[in-house]
Amino acid sequence: MSYYEPPKGLDATIYSPYVDLKWTNDTGHYILIQTYVDRDANKVTFRYYGTNPGRTVEMEGPVEANPVPHGPAVYRDDPTLPKGQQKQIEWAKDGWT
Image (cartoon, rainbow, N blue to C red; front, top):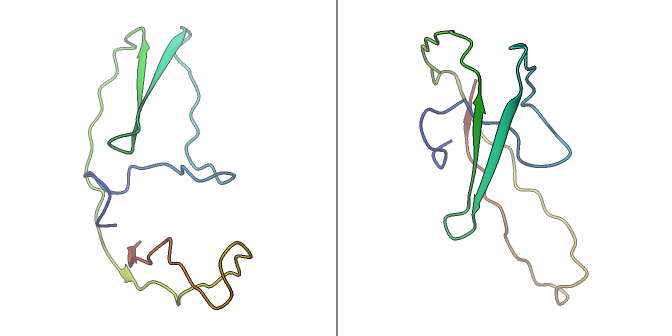
């Protein structure tokens, strides 16, 4: 998605009730999670602190492949709008597998 910051594909769901980021603390130690919200920048940041388990991380990708075109527009009635008025609040984007 063009509006995500790189690296693409390492995001997690932010729309309830769908959650796709799950993890387990297998370090045997406590982990502190600090959350920062920057409303002006429309950004949420999570910082994780804990005992260094001595692991290393290597990353390859994600790879953008197999474009998936977005579906048709979806319209929903909103009784708060005047009759006959439409208001677009989201825009479809093509995806990737």
